[in-house]
Length: 595
Image (cartoon, rainbow, N blue to C red; front, side, top):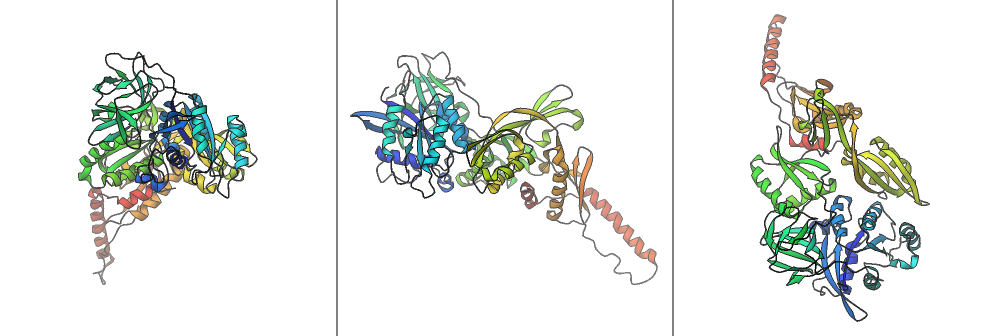
């Protein structure tokens, strides 16, 4: 065990985690030159295109230090706030972390968030300044920031360029010297933590785990703690670029298990594996269920493809443990699914992956968050969808989720960022200057306010400099109302939304104006109304297409014309009673883009 080191690489987005991982793999000759490529651990096309890591990847390297061979297990982690669940699992299965900071950008919000997570788990931190070869690099200034944050000496910080490979070799020695070997009892009953799982269509679910106590052998009967299911370990092994089978995975090491599991629900990331005949007494602490933050409806473009969408989502969930879904139906869109995501980027990535990997095109409704509703009868339930909201007379009060937002930016953009947060119902908790020209702001804000375009607006007003991170702090009472859109007196449920009372009037007014331009004219007037309960707060009318019925009257008495007009009016009235309004797809998409 003393020759094993488990570590992860943590950083903000685009600070060079995957590139540094490439250099470490090259230096340890884990891959030959033919297999080597940029971002070698990012195996999804989408990851390479967007330049972000979506899933954490584990790989084992060998390094010789002072004549002795060491096994280094590296877990590369995503940097974006929407994938922080992946990071928390990786940190739980390591003893040390390499903290990468971009020498041209300095410390960002996600750097601090991931660092605190690692410190809470008692990990040994190795600070690395990356991109020192860039013209805009400020290694001395950023090194001082890192020293202030970690309380370390400037000599402890490695200054490297992961792109050119400059200064990367000493990091491997530092991993062996500074990161402690895993602790555990090889003779104790098996206790292993699952930190990731992937689905293989031929072999079922492959679970990645780290052994804390005991060891696991091929052919062992094992069981999963949280589900209580029992399996036979058909194959165990270690993770190189491909899976390498071995006879056993011993204490302190990282490996994989294949046992023919076909359902993703049976493998929970963060669960504990133990043996059937010699079980451990308790699960490894720190296991938490993933909680979706943002909800949106997904519907097939063609209603006949509902069953196909169901089977696609089942397969997709096997590859993405943080994605949840349940069936629902809408009057406007037919049958579909209510899906839960960790954030808006996660929603975008899921949509893109469904299209690329399964050729499935979906319509996504307005994203919203989940609310706690308390009724006058003393009941409490969660509402993810405006259509599930009870009548206003039955509601005692509603609570909405609040977040603690941490924004780090240049001091020049201090004013516009404060205005943005105040407009989004934020309250300032604290502010402090990290350096003379970099400020950190902490705000309490409703989650529903950042779901729509907050991140894009923040990047725009700060010219791309501000970085943003958040975590849920709890639920607070809020004055929310359900805004319904009525077309010809009928509510269009897919256009309903839950909104704060103060913003309801302006939002309703803009919705009506937008829909007026997009709904095609009919033979009768179509009133478009925004309503809260029975109270109409805004109205627009799509004018009818009329035939000139008096064209044949070239003279004679006025009563002839009036008689024809009255007859037409009766017909229009009858038509309006039986007429239905079709909402075109373009109107739907435009409402989503209302800023």
